[in-house]
Length: 478
Image 1 (cartoon, helix red, strand yellow):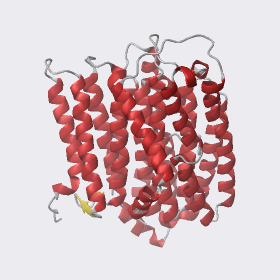
Image 2 (spheres, helix red, strand yellow; image 1 turned 180 degrees about the horizontal axis):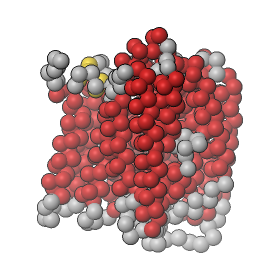
Image 3 (cartoon, rainbow, N blue to C red; image 1 turned 120 degrees about the vertical axis):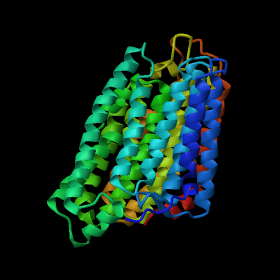
Image 4 (cartoon, rainbow, N blue to C red; image 1 turned 90 degrees about the vertical axis):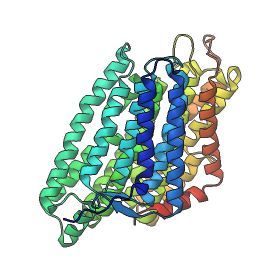
C-alpha cells in the first residue's frame, strides 16, 4: 500500500491547538507564572487557529490526508470556526469564574483545548473510526470538566451522570460502526457511499439506527436527552455553556456528513426517523422548559429544543437544509454561550442566581446585565432582528422547499411556545419588583468583553446574514 506524504499545512489549525495545549501545560508547571496568563495563552492560540481556519476556508481548501481518513475541506473548516469561537468565548467567561489565582486553571484550560481538538477531528473525519476517536477525545475531557468542582456535590453528580450515560452512548455508536462495517466491508465514509449503490443490507440499516442512538445521546435528542438537564444544572456554568455549544455542533457536524454523504442512498429509510425525532425533540424540549424555575435547567431544555430545529435541516435532505443547519449552529453557539455568560454575570457573594425569580427588577438595578440577557433570549426565541430569527427562517424555508410542510408547521408552533418561557425572564427583569435586594458582584472585564462579542454577533448576523449564510452554502459538501 502506498503511503501518501503528509501535507502538514493542511493540518495547521489542529497543530496550532495542539501546540497551544503543550505551551499551556509547560507554563502550568512553573509556580512563578500567574495562572491567569494560561487563559490568555489559550485565547491567543485559539485565535491564531481561528485565523488560519478562516484563511483556508477563503482559499477553498479541499484535500484528504492520512490515506483519505481525514478530509480538510470547507465544511470542516467552517465548523472549526464555530468550535474556536466557542472556545474563545468560553475561556473569556471562565477567567473570573474560576478566580484569577485558582491553581486548577491549568488542567481546566488543557481539557478545554483537548475537547476542541476532538471536535475538530469529528468535523474532518472521513472515516467512522476517526469520528469515534474525536468523539471520545472530546467526551472524556467534558466528563472531567462537568465534575471539575470536586467539593461540590452537584458538580460531582453531574460528572458521574455524564460519564455513565456518555459511555453508554459510545457503546451504541461503536456497535453501529461494527454493523456498518459488517454490511459494507469498510468504515470509510466515501467507501460506504459507494457500497450503497446496489442497496443496503439489514446489518447496515441496524448500524444506521445505532448511529442515530449514539449521536442522539451526544447532542441530546429526545428520547436520549435525560442527562442534559442534570448535567447542565450541576456542572460549572462556564462548562455548561461549553457543553451546550461546541460539542453539540461537533456532533451535528459528524451526523450531517455521515447521513448526507455515506448514507445518502438510504434517505427513504432515515428521513422518517429523523423527522419524528425532530418533532419529539422540539416539542418535549419546549413544553418541559415552561415548567422550569431554575434558569440553567430551562436553558438545558431549550438546548434540547434547538437540537430539534437543527434536525429540520437534515430532514430537508438538500443543500439548503445542510447549509441552513450549519448557519443555525453558529448562531446558536454564540447565543447560548452569551446566555450562560449573563448567568455568570448575575453572581452574588452567596453564589450564582439560578432561580428565575432572582432576576426580578434587574432591568433597572443592573441594566447592562439585563440588556445582555434580553438580547440572548430574544435570539433564542427567534425574534427579529436577531440572528436567531434569520436562522429559523432559513431552516424552515429549506424544509418547505423539500416538501416538509407539516414539519415546518410544528416547528413554527414550537417557536411560539418557546417565546413564553424566554419572554417570562424578560418580563421578570423589567416588570417585577425584587422580593429581596441581592448584592451582585462587580462586572468582570473579561466576561463583559465576551458578552459584547456575543451580543454584537447576534445583532450583526441578524441584520446582515448574507455573508455568513453564503459561507455556509459554499462550505456544504453536497
